[in-house]
Each structure stands twice: as structure tokens, then as C-alpha cells.
Image 1 (tube, helix red, strand yellow):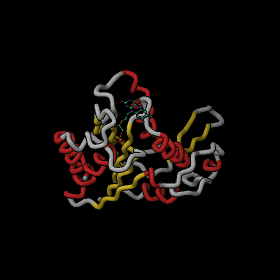
Image 2 (image 1 turned 120 degrees about the vertical axis):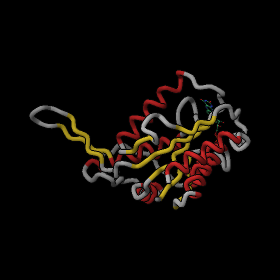
Image 3 (image 1 turned 180 degrees about the horizontal axis):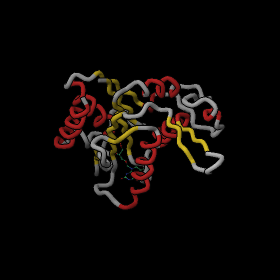
Length: 199
Ligand SMILES: Cc1cc2nc3c(=O)[nH]c(=O)nc-3n(C[C@H](O)[C@H](O)[C@H](O)COP(=O)(O)O)c2cc1C
């Protein structure tokens, strides 16, 4: 069992990183092989919308640190994704990865029926744990766009959230303190237990 954790906080050692690490720890304690990737350290270029990937699915013309990472992600059994909430959505670092994974998504239109058929080139069936951290102490309707787009994206790249429903490890109310999640023993325990359930 191989589990990769990828977090998209620009902050070193902050809440999202801590919780992704705790999920990985839970999996590692059950014998999983784990790896942590911090997007903040990577050279990442945005999707340029050239659509060259549609002629060669799974291959993006942009060459940078996301090139080997996306290939590596495809080889893991489970993926732990983490992002802080920025303006009711994910960070730019997270969105850059999401957009670049578009290279695994293709479609064709049946010329007779005009039906739209998706072609999903990312290996399907991966379990996904999704970690967020936010300053806000509560959930609100304002975040629904994020949840809905995230769910659509995970389906499209062939990943399913753990426990089939919208299962997350959410951290609320950090008020921008970097170590707020670490001080929340229940949340840390939950992150480890979600990780253990992966392995
Ligand atoms: C640009 C920016 C936008 C933010 N937008 C939100 C927001 O919409 N809702 C919220 O609850 N917190 C927001 N925050 C606060 C972060 O989500 C919060 O500090 C989070 O715990 C950071 O995660 P980290 O510690 O892993 O970096 C924002 C912070 C920044 C810097």
C-alpha cells in the first residue's frame, strides 16, 4: 500500500502540512509506504490551455516539477490532498496542480448521436483523503462552490473520496495561527485514524 500526501499551503510547517503529515503517519503506522510532497517547494507552471494533451493524454507540454509528480501520483494507491482555504476556495498552488491534471482528461463527441463521452486517462480507483484548514470557525454556504467543484474534479480524474461521501479532515478556526491544528488533539487523532483506515 503506497500513500502520497501533497499539500498546497505556502506556509512551512503550518496547519495543512501538519494534518496531511498526521494522515500519513496513521497510514505508515499500519504499514503503508508514505511520501510527503510540499507544492510550495516545487517549480510549477500553470496550464496554458493549448490542448496538446488531448492528442496525447497524460502528457502535458509544460515541463517542470509537476511533470514527474503527476506521473508518480498515478502509481499510488491513495492520495492525501491538502489545501488551506483562500477566498472560499483552494490556494493557487492547489489550483495549479488541478489544472495541470487536465492532461489526463479527454472527451469525444459521437458524430451520429452527438453524445459526449469522457475518456479518463488517470488510473481510476484511488482513495483520496482531503484536508483543509481555514481561519473561519464555521462552515458556510459560501464554501459550497469549492466542495462541488472539488467533487466534480475528483470524479473526472478518477479518484473517489474516502468513505464514498464527502469525507474530509477539516480544520476550522485557525485564525491564521500556524500551530492551531497541532493543539487540537481530537483533530490530530481523527487525521491519524483516517490515515490508518487507508492502509
Ligand atoms: C489570501 C488568503 C485568503 C484567505 N481566505 C480565507 C477564507 O476564505 N476563509 C477562511 O476561513 N480563511 C481564509 N484564510 C485563512 C487561512 O485559510 C488560514 O490561515 C489557514 O489556517 C491557513 O492554512 P495553513 O496554516 O495550512 O497555511 C485566508 C488566508 C489568506 C492568506
